[in-house]
Image (cartoon, rainbow, N blue to C red; front, side, top):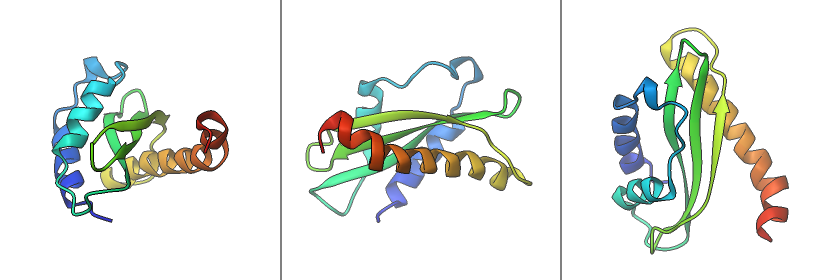
Length: 120
């Protein structure tokens, strides 16, 4: 697991959140541009990253994209959008619940839905 580069880039995404842009989906081109910025130690295989899109406290939701990509070419192979609810006390824990829910949905999709959909 090499998250240092991902963490830095994702933090810059969070800092640039725009409430007016909350429901616009990330395009494959935007996801590819982000994935290409990651400085990874591994040079081959499949990478997975969660890209935050928005945290909206007033409407009570967070959006994350699970992105699987080929590390060598940085080509996005599969992406899935997850809109989840935050919860808990304190700013960190409040949004951590949204991330946790997205991870749970990703796990369910990866093990049950994606094999049938993508033939793996």
